[in-house]
Length: 445
Image 1 (cartoon, rainbow, N blue to C red):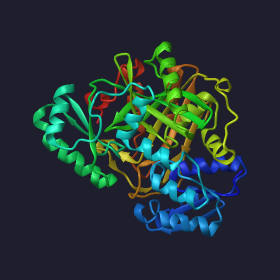
Image 2: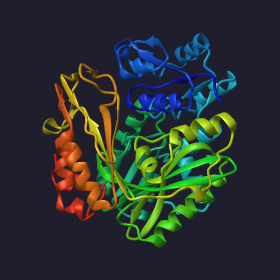
Image 3: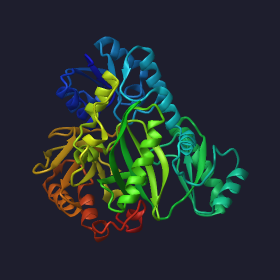
């Protein structure tokens, strides 16, 4: 097992990783920016080191500073969490060449599956159904017009290196194509330093369904699927498992095809394969080669600590788990609590948390890094914690979540807690009559 793990991240995921390391008796190193010196992950780690200013490129995205922290502290492994450098193949390459273990798949796999165009080609080659669209990057407006006309409007323009809704543009007709193409390329260049874009058929009422996997290159298992269809601007707000729209035959087909694909990738660690589900059919969307924000949903339902398994696989090169070891229980829902004001167009709400009371109780879990007196800065993602509830069935899970949301008290900043209450109480959510565009159509904000 590793002698010391450096966590190349911050916030709730850094805290989550520290908890797993403590249970494995592995000391941790927290890196932090100057404004994060009093953060929870810094307080909980055995060691901490400031690596730069509040700007992400000077700290959490600063590879040289992170590797210097490794040298100073003597860490022999790095856990990247999610976001920041977690899917940066160049970072994974540098870590590995420095004889430090990168807790995740190889740089080669990150590069292959991180490029959306290449991932789509790979998935197709390995037998997964893919969304109709361009075979590769779009090189000209004329090419875009031809492809869009062939598959039929509406279409979606996407950044090859994209994520989080950046570099994505919906095109409803040919008159919108030129400007949307230009804007998508500009966004892609700005956020990912790569302006390659591609085109896919746009689905009017799709569900977003993903499969959690664990693999040690030789053995691959799944922890079931998650339904992440409650979204705002392509950002997930609520996730649940199992998906209430899949019948058992479709579910088993989805899980089987996912395992078949991943088992051919020489994949190591945790990962998620994402799909669009529409009219009874599923189509490969992308693969995330890291831990997901919503991993607790699968942990609770499958009874497996995914972060611990990541560390074990990275340390000894194999997992002791077999698919038969996984027993799924009940229904699990997660709400992402963000420091945003839904009444002001989701404007970020930085500030100091003056009152903080977190819910507890039967089958109720909070993953976060907040506390009374905690400072929420404007410099990073607005996610402050996640509330996860399990019930014997979906109805009980919803009721438990509503009870827990009522208990949650956060003062000093605006949050999305009341929005979650509104969503979970809505008839269409209760009846699972929604899709990824539902919140916009229902005028929730």
